[in-house]
Amino acid sequence: MDIQIFHLSNGIRFIHQYNNSAVAHCGLVINTGTRDELSNEHGLAHFIEHVLFKGTKKRKTFHINSRLEDVGGELNAYTSKEDTAVHATILKGDFEKAVELISDIVFNSIFPPKELEKEKEVILDEINSYKDSPADLIFDDFEDLLFNGTSLGHNILGTKKQLKRFTRKNILDFIARTYNTNQMVFSSIGKIRPEKALKIVEKYFGGIPANPRQYVRNGVLPYQPFTKAISKNTYQTHCVIGQRGYAYSDEKRIPLLLLTNILGGPAPNSRLNLALREKYGLTYNVEASFTPYTDTGTFTIYFGTDKANFDKSHALIFKETKRLQDDKLGTLQLHKAKKQVLGQLAISGESNEQVMLTNAKSLLVYNTIDSMETIAARINAITSERLTDIANEIFDANNLSSLTYN
Image 1: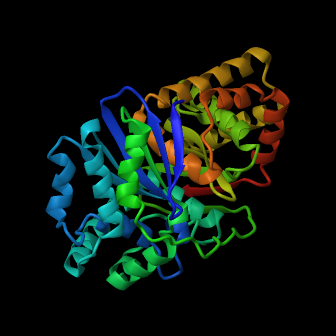
Image 2: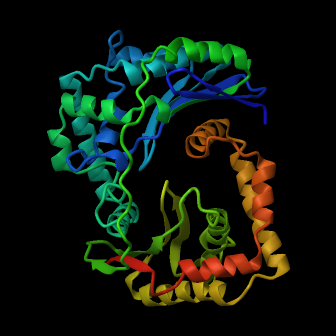
């Protein structure tokens, strides 16, 4: 990896990866998300992500949207439970334009009141659209129960009632408190010399006043397993089964990632897909997922099926988790499982945009970047016994929770 890391005097870190592509990707990733919202701010982090594009001290919305699009580039943003990112894709010759624009909208946005009201209507429509998708909505409801209704469990979009109340002052207060320079990483990848990239980033980010974080995120409340069913007017029955997983810093994180992939990863040969879809045709979609956070995580199994097939599908899922608890993987099975995950990671590494964002997240969480060789070594060191131990911890029926839409 041809990667260099730099530290600006205000605490912002800059990571650049050189490659031979004429297309460059860059973005600012901030260690701030919906988890950092106060009780009266539910949905504010996501709202800010939208309205950052609505005007700065020197640009109107049209000029922001046109700045990169006029040269064939793209400007985008996202909000998650713990992150906010503004990022761009451009030709390498337009790298400075992208850096300057990202700096301008993050640090110089003026949030015109009329634009705020218009964007509220856009997000209200987004909330309505989301409520029409039970396969998505059930995950938010599950995490809200999993984390006892705290900010980590809250959905990213917020509520209609709270959204309508947000003012420009709410936005400015949130940014002042949470957009901290020592919690920011600017990341880039492209055929640009590191010293040139650093000079450009210093020009547009080096003068930002230091604003170190003054608060510590609230920890999660103790976990209490639950079983809940909600009546919904849906054709299918939707169900999420799961519990809390491991944090970024937990050494069991990578073994659980491997175990999750074996059980219900994206490949058609996952155990749940073979058992429910391929063998019996009970479901179109069944999957397992694991998401780590700073101090905890989530492990979930999701499936949607005809109401008449729910009990059989539910039983088959527990049959597969029990197999992983009771039966150690053989040498060949374990080897194939590791090869599959390593192949998936290598393929994801072909997306330069994803690499750029992953580098930023890794620097925020670990303050370092692991090479593919280091990651492969950790995966290859996993034993069958280790997977069985983790399966018994995560798949323990006494600790699993479930939410069903029926």
